[in-house]
Image 1 (cartoon, helix red, strand yellow):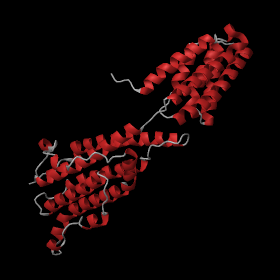
Image 2: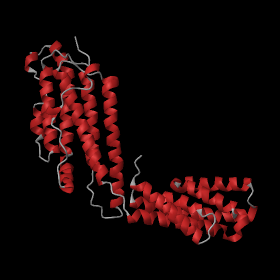
Image 3: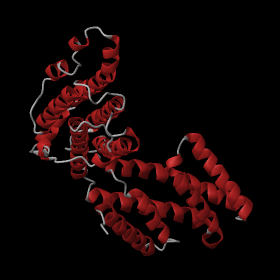
Image 4: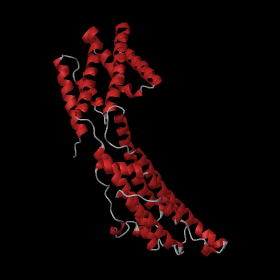
Length: 355
Protein backbone atom coordinates (compact mmCIF):
# COMPACT_ATOMS: atom_id res chain seq x y z
CA UNK A 1 0.00 0.00 0.00
CA UNK A 2 1.35 3.41 -1.01
CA UNK A 3 1.25 6.14 1.65
CA UNK A 4 1.48 9.66 0.28
CA UNK A 5 2.96 12.74 1.90
CA UNK A 6 -0.47 14.12 2.71
CA UNK A 7 -1.25 11.02 4.80
CA UNK A 8 2.04 11.38 6.67
CA UNK A 9 1.40 15.07 7.33
CA UNK A 10 -2.11 14.29 8.60
CA UNK A 11 -0.79 11.66 11.04
CA UNK A 12 1.83 14.11 12.36
CA UNK A 13 -0.77 16.88 12.72
CA UNK A 14 -3.16 14.60 14.63
CA UNK A 15 -0.45 13.49 17.07
CA UNK A 16 0.85 17.00 17.74
CA UNK A 17 -2.67 18.43 18.16
CA UNK A 18 -3.72 15.83 20.71
CA UNK A 19 -0.43 16.23 22.60
CA UNK A 20 -0.89 20.02 22.75
CA UNK A 21 -4.50 19.69 23.90
CA UNK A 22 -3.51 17.28 26.66
CA UNK A 23 -0.68 19.56 27.77
CA UNK A 24 -3.19 22.40 28.13
CA UNK A 25 -5.69 20.05 29.84
CA UNK A 26 -8.44 20.73 27.34
CA UNK A 27 -11.36 18.33 27.18
CA UNK A 28 -11.81 16.27 25.06
CA UNK A 29 -8.23 16.41 23.71
CA UNK A 30 -8.88 14.01 20.82
CA UNK A 31 -11.18 16.59 19.24
CA UNK A 32 -8.13 18.72 18.38
CA UNK A 33 -6.77 15.76 16.40
CA UNK A 34 -10.03 15.43 14.50
CA UNK A 35 -10.00 19.12 13.59
CA UNK A 36 -6.35 19.00 12.49
CA UNK A 37 -7.30 16.49 9.77
CA UNK A 38 -9.47 19.17 8.16
CA UNK A 39 -6.52 21.57 7.98
CA UNK A 40 -4.22 19.33 5.92
CA UNK A 41 -5.61 20.23 2.50
CA UNK A 42 -4.14 19.46 -0.97
CA UNK A 43 -3.18 23.13 -1.40
CA UNK A 44 -1.70 25.60 1.09
CA UNK A 45 -4.16 28.31 0.10
CA UNK A 46 -7.07 26.00 0.84
CA UNK A 47 -5.60 25.19 4.27
CA UNK A 48 -5.46 28.86 5.28
CA UNK A 49 -8.82 29.73 3.73
CA UNK A 50 -10.62 26.85 5.40
CA UNK A 51 -8.85 27.51 8.71
CA UNK A 52 -10.36 31.00 8.84
CA UNK A 53 -13.80 29.70 7.86
CA UNK A 54 -13.68 26.85 10.39
CA UNK A 55 -12.54 29.15 13.19
CA UNK A 56 -15.42 31.58 12.57
CA UNK A 57 -17.95 28.72 12.50
CA UNK A 58 -16.48 27.10 15.61
CA UNK A 59 -16.61 30.39 17.53
CA UNK A 60 -20.25 30.92 16.62
CA UNK A 61 -21.27 27.31 17.33
CA UNK A 62 -19.50 27.21 20.71
CA UNK A 63 -20.99 30.48 21.92
CA UNK A 64 -24.42 29.57 20.57
CA UNK A 65 -24.23 26.12 22.16
CA UNK A 66 -23.22 27.35 25.61
CA UNK A 67 -25.90 30.02 25.42
CA UNK A 68 -28.60 27.45 24.63
CA UNK A 69 -27.32 25.16 27.38
CA UNK A 70 -27.34 27.92 30.00
CA UNK A 71 -30.82 29.10 28.98
CA UNK A 72 -32.65 25.84 28.28
CA UNK A 73 -30.36 23.09 29.57
CA UNK A 74 -28.67 20.41 27.52
CA UNK A 75 -31.50 17.95 26.94
CA UNK A 76 -31.55 15.95 23.74
CA UNK A 77 -34.40 18.11 22.41
CA UNK A 78 -32.46 21.33 23.07
CA UNK A 79 -29.31 19.94 21.39
CA UNK A 80 -31.33 18.82 18.35
CA UNK A 81 -32.97 22.26 18.06
CA UNK A 82 -29.58 23.98 18.36
CA UNK A 83 -28.14 21.76 15.61
CA UNK A 84 -31.09 22.66 13.38
CA UNK A 85 -30.54 26.39 13.89
CA UNK A 86 -26.76 26.14 13.33
CA UNK A 87 -27.28 24.15 10.12
CA UNK A 88 -29.99 26.50 8.84
CA UNK A 89 -27.77 29.55 9.40
CA UNK A 90 -24.77 28.01 7.63
CA UNK A 91 -26.88 26.88 4.68
CA UNK A 92 -28.51 30.30 4.47
CA UNK A 93 -25.11 32.05 4.45
CA UNK A 94 -23.62 29.57 1.99
CA UNK A 95 -20.97 28.42 4.50
CA UNK A 96 -21.60 24.71 4.05
CA UNK A 97 -17.86 23.97 3.97
CA UNK A 98 -17.76 24.51 7.75
CA UNK A 99 -21.22 23.16 8.53
CA UNK A 100 -20.16 19.75 9.84
CA UNK A 101 -17.48 21.20 12.11
CA UNK A 102 -19.93 23.78 13.47
CA UNK A 103 -22.45 21.05 14.29
CA UNK A 104 -19.81 18.93 16.04
CA UNK A 105 -18.56 21.92 18.05
CA UNK A 106 -22.10 22.84 19.05
CA UNK A 107 -22.90 19.29 20.19
CA UNK A 108 -19.59 18.95 22.08
CA UNK A 109 -20.12 22.29 23.79
CA UNK A 110 -23.62 21.45 24.98
CA UNK A 111 -22.64 17.88 25.85
CA UNK A 112 -19.81 19.00 28.14
CA UNK A 113 -21.54 22.10 29.54
CA UNK A 114 -22.44 20.43 32.86
CA UNK A 115 -18.88 19.10 33.32
CA UNK A 116 -16.95 22.24 32.37
CA UNK A 117 -19.60 24.83 33.30
CA UNK A 118 -18.61 28.21 31.83
CA UNK A 119 -15.42 26.81 30.29
CA UNK A 120 -17.23 24.50 27.83
CA UNK A 121 -17.28 27.03 25.00
CA UNK A 122 -13.71 28.19 25.54
CA UNK A 123 -12.46 24.60 25.54
CA UNK A 124 -14.12 23.89 22.20
CA UNK A 125 -12.79 27.10 20.63
CA UNK A 126 -9.26 26.38 21.87
CA UNK A 127 -9.41 22.80 20.60
CA UNK A 128 -10.43 24.01 17.14
CA UNK A 129 -7.73 26.69 17.24
CA UNK A 130 -5.05 24.14 18.16
CA UNK A 131 -6.20 21.64 15.54
CA UNK A 132 -6.40 24.17 12.71
CA UNK A 133 -3.13 25.89 13.66
CA UNK A 134 -1.13 22.68 13.96
CA UNK A 135 -2.62 21.16 10.80
CA UNK A 136 -2.00 24.30 8.74
CA UNK A 137 1.53 24.68 10.11
CA UNK A 138 2.41 21.06 9.27
CA UNK A 139 1.00 21.56 5.77
CA UNK A 140 3.05 24.76 5.36
CA UNK A 141 6.32 23.16 6.50
CA UNK A 142 6.13 20.71 3.61
CA UNK A 143 4.06 22.64 1.06
CA UNK A 144 2.01 20.51 -1.36
CA UNK A 145 3.78 20.24 -4.72
CA UNK A 146 1.82 19.13 -7.76
CA UNK A 147 4.46 19.35 -10.49
CA UNK A 148 5.20 15.63 -10.71
CA UNK A 149 1.54 14.66 -10.74
CA UNK A 150 0.79 17.41 -13.24
CA UNK A 151 3.53 16.25 -15.60
CA UNK A 152 2.40 12.64 -15.32
CA UNK A 153 -1.21 13.47 -16.16
CA UNK A 154 -0.15 15.64 -19.10
CA UNK A 155 2.06 12.91 -20.51
CA UNK A 156 -0.54 10.21 -19.95
CA UNK A 157 -3.40 12.23 -21.48
CA UNK A 158 -1.39 13.27 -24.55
CA UNK A 159 -0.06 9.75 -25.09
CA UNK A 160 -3.52 8.18 -24.81
CA UNK A 161 -4.98 10.72 -27.26
CA UNK A 162 -2.26 9.95 -29.77
CA UNK A 163 -2.55 6.21 -29.21
CA UNK A 164 -6.30 6.19 -29.79
CA UNK A 165 -5.92 8.24 -32.98
CA UNK A 166 -3.23 5.85 -34.18
CA UNK A 167 -5.44 2.81 -33.58
CA UNK A 168 -8.15 4.42 -35.71
CA UNK A 169 -5.54 4.85 -38.44
CA UNK A 170 -4.50 1.19 -38.14
CA UNK A 171 -8.09 0.02 -38.46
CA UNK A 172 -8.64 2.15 -41.57
CA UNK A 173 -5.48 0.77 -43.14
CA UNK A 174 -6.72 -2.77 -42.39
CA UNK A 175 -10.11 -2.05 -43.99
CA UNK A 176 -12.20 -2.11 -40.85
CA UNK A 177 -13.95 0.24 -38.43
CA UNK A 178 -14.05 -0.26 -34.68
CA UNK A 179 -17.62 -0.02 -33.30
CA UNK A 180 -18.21 3.11 -31.26
CA UNK A 181 -20.25 1.30 -28.61
CA UNK A 182 -19.00 -0.05 -26.33
CA UNK A 183 -15.34 -0.22 -27.38
CA UNK A 184 -14.44 3.28 -28.55
CA UNK A 185 -16.79 4.89 -26.04
CA UNK A 186 -15.08 3.08 -23.15
CA UNK A 187 -11.62 4.13 -24.35
CA UNK A 188 -12.74 7.75 -24.72
CA UNK A 189 -14.21 7.75 -21.20
CA UNK A 190 -10.92 6.41 -19.79
CA UNK A 191 -8.98 9.27 -21.41
CA UNK A 192 -11.56 11.80 -20.24
CA UNK A 193 -11.06 10.57 -16.65
CA UNK A 194 -7.33 11.42 -16.84
CA UNK A 195 -8.14 14.83 -18.30
CA UNK A 196 -10.59 15.54 -15.46
CA UNK A 197 -7.88 14.65 -12.95
CA UNK A 198 -5.63 17.12 -14.77
CA UNK A 199 -8.27 19.82 -14.38
CA UNK A 200 -8.37 19.15 -10.63
CA UNK A 201 -4.57 19.45 -10.32
CA UNK A 202 -4.63 22.68 -12.34
CA UNK A 203 -7.19 24.04 -9.88
CA UNK A 204 -4.88 23.29 -6.95
CA UNK A 205 -2.02 25.09 -8.73
CA UNK A 206 -4.22 28.14 -9.31
CA UNK A 207 -5.21 28.15 -5.63
CA UNK A 208 -1.59 28.14 -4.47
CA UNK A 209 -0.77 30.96 -6.88
CA UNK A 210 -3.24 33.16 -4.99
CA UNK A 211 -1.26 32.63 -1.80
CA UNK A 212 2.30 31.75 -2.75
CA UNK A 213 4.60 32.40 -5.68
CA UNK A 214 4.22 28.98 -7.20
CA UNK A 215 6.74 28.13 -9.92
CA UNK A 216 4.53 25.41 -11.36
CA UNK A 217 3.29 26.28 -14.87
CA UNK A 218 -0.41 26.76 -15.54
CA UNK A 219 -1.83 23.71 -17.30
CA UNK A 220 -5.55 24.48 -17.27
CA UNK A 221 -5.58 25.61 -20.92
CA UNK A 222 -3.76 22.44 -22.03
CA UNK A 223 -6.27 20.15 -20.35
CA UNK A 224 -9.12 22.20 -21.82
CA UNK A 225 -7.58 21.65 -25.26
CA UNK A 226 -7.21 17.94 -24.54
CA UNK A 227 -10.85 17.84 -23.49
CA UNK A 228 -11.88 19.30 -26.85
CA UNK A 229 -9.51 16.95 -28.69
CA UNK A 230 -11.06 13.84 -27.15
CA UNK A 231 -14.48 15.12 -28.19
CA UNK A 232 -13.22 15.47 -31.75
CA UNK A 233 -11.96 11.88 -31.66
CA UNK A 234 -15.44 10.88 -30.55
CA UNK A 235 -16.93 12.76 -33.53
CA UNK A 236 -14.38 11.10 -35.83
CA UNK A 237 -15.28 7.65 -34.55
CA UNK A 238 -19.01 8.27 -34.92
CA UNK A 239 -18.54 9.58 -38.46
CA UNK A 240 -16.59 6.43 -39.37
CA UNK A 241 -19.52 4.25 -38.32
CA UNK A 242 -21.36 5.44 -41.47
CA UNK A 243 -18.56 5.30 -44.06
CA UNK A 244 -18.14 2.82 -46.90
CA UNK A 245 -14.80 1.35 -45.88
CA UNK A 246 -14.20 0.17 -49.47
CA UNK A 247 -14.23 3.74 -50.74
CA UNK A 248 -10.87 5.12 -51.93
CA UNK A 249 -11.28 8.01 -49.47
CA UNK A 250 -10.60 5.58 -46.60
CA UNK A 251 -6.96 5.31 -47.70
CA UNK A 252 -6.63 9.11 -47.91
CA UNK A 253 -8.22 9.55 -44.48
CA UNK A 254 -5.75 7.09 -42.96
CA UNK A 255 -2.88 9.11 -44.45
CA UNK A 256 -4.42 12.33 -43.14
CA UNK A 257 -4.59 10.86 -39.63
CA UNK A 258 -0.91 9.95 -39.98
CA UNK A 259 -0.15 13.57 -40.89
CA UNK A 260 -1.95 14.82 -37.76
CA UNK A 261 -0.08 12.27 -35.63
CA UNK A 262 3.23 13.56 -36.98
CA UNK A 263 2.17 17.11 -36.07
CA UNK A 264 1.29 16.02 -32.54
CA UNK A 265 4.65 14.29 -32.15
CA UNK A 266 6.41 17.47 -33.30
CA UNK A 267 4.63 19.52 -30.65
CA UNK A 268 5.27 16.92 -27.93
CA UNK A 269 8.99 17.03 -28.79
CA UNK A 270 9.09 20.83 -28.43
CA UNK A 271 8.82 21.82 -32.10
CA UNK A 272 6.14 23.90 -33.85
CA UNK A 273 3.56 23.16 -36.52
CA UNK A 274 1.62 25.16 -39.12
CA UNK A 275 -2.02 24.13 -38.68
CA UNK A 276 -3.14 26.00 -41.80
CA UNK A 277 -1.09 23.78 -44.10
CA UNK A 278 -2.27 20.63 -42.35
CA UNK A 279 -5.96 21.59 -42.35
CA UNK A 280 -5.73 22.48 -46.06
CA UNK A 281 -5.39 18.79 -46.95
CA UNK A 282 -8.00 17.55 -44.45
CA UNK A 283 -10.82 17.37 -46.94
CA UNK A 284 -12.22 14.74 -49.33
CA UNK A 285 -11.40 14.73 -53.03
CA UNK A 286 -14.54 16.09 -54.67
CA UNK A 287 -13.31 15.92 -58.26
CA UNK A 288 -13.95 12.19 -58.41
CA UNK A 289 -17.65 12.61 -57.65
CA UNK A 290 -18.33 14.57 -60.87
CA UNK A 291 -21.36 16.09 -59.19
CA UNK A 292 -23.01 12.69 -58.75
CA UNK A 293 -25.47 12.86 -55.80
CA UNK A 294 -24.85 9.24 -54.85
CA UNK A 295 -21.08 9.79 -54.74
CA UNK A 296 -21.54 12.95 -52.71
CA UNK A 297 -23.68 11.07 -50.18
CA UNK A 298 -20.96 8.43 -49.87
CA UNK A 299 -18.40 11.17 -49.17
CA UNK A 300 -20.49 12.98 -46.54
CA UNK A 301 -19.38 10.81 -43.56
CA UNK A 302 -15.78 11.26 -44.71
CA UNK A 303 -16.33 15.02 -44.83
CA UNK A 304 -17.51 14.92 -41.19
CA UNK A 305 -14.46 12.84 -40.27
CA UNK A 306 -12.11 15.35 -41.90
CA UNK A 307 -13.86 18.22 -40.09
CA UNK A 308 -13.35 16.51 -36.72
CA UNK A 309 -9.70 15.90 -37.61
CA UNK A 310 -9.19 19.55 -38.60
CA UNK A 311 -10.74 20.78 -35.33
CA UNK A 312 -8.47 18.35 -33.47
CA UNK A 313 -5.45 19.90 -35.22
CA UNK A 314 -6.52 23.47 -34.44
CA UNK A 315 -6.99 22.60 -30.77
CA UNK A 316 -3.59 20.89 -30.74
CA UNK A 317 -2.06 24.09 -32.08
CA UNK A 318 -3.92 26.16 -29.45
CA UNK A 319 -2.24 24.13 -26.68
CA UNK A 320 1.21 24.58 -28.23
CA UNK A 321 2.29 27.81 -26.37
CA UNK A 322 1.46 26.29 -22.99
CA UNK A 323 3.29 23.08 -23.86
CA UNK A 324 6.37 25.09 -24.82
CA UNK A 325 6.16 26.83 -21.43
CA UNK A 326 6.07 23.43 -19.75
CA UNK A 327 9.11 22.29 -21.74
CA UNK A 328 11.03 25.25 -20.33
CA UNK A 329 9.77 24.71 -16.79
CA UNK A 330 10.54 20.99 -16.80
CA UNK A 331 13.82 21.61 -18.68
CA UNK A 332 13.02 18.73 -21.04
CA UNK A 333 10.44 17.91 -23.71
CA UNK A 334 7.50 15.71 -22.91
CA UNK A 335 8.15 12.03 -23.71
CA UNK A 336 7.28 11.01 -27.26
CA UNK A 337 6.39 7.52 -28.35
CA UNK A 338 6.77 7.29 -32.13
CA UNK A 339 3.66 6.08 -33.88
CA UNK A 340 5.66 3.57 -35.91
CA UNK A 341 6.37 1.47 -32.83
CA UNK A 342 2.77 0.43 -32.34
CA UNK A 343 2.30 -2.95 -33.95
CA UNK A 344 -1.36 -3.66 -33.49
CA UNK A 345 -4.72 -2.44 -32.28
CA UNK A 346 -6.23 -3.75 -29.04
CA UNK A 347 -9.59 -3.35 -30.77
CA UNK A 348 -8.76 -5.70 -33.65
CA UNK A 349 -10.72 -8.63 -32.27
CA UNK A 350 -13.80 -6.44 -31.90
CA UNK A 351 -13.41 -4.59 -35.18
CA UNK A 352 -15.96 -5.25 -37.86
CA UNK A 353 -15.53 -5.29 -41.59
CA UNK A 354 -17.89 -3.35 -43.77
CA UNK A 355 -19.26 -5.36 -46.69
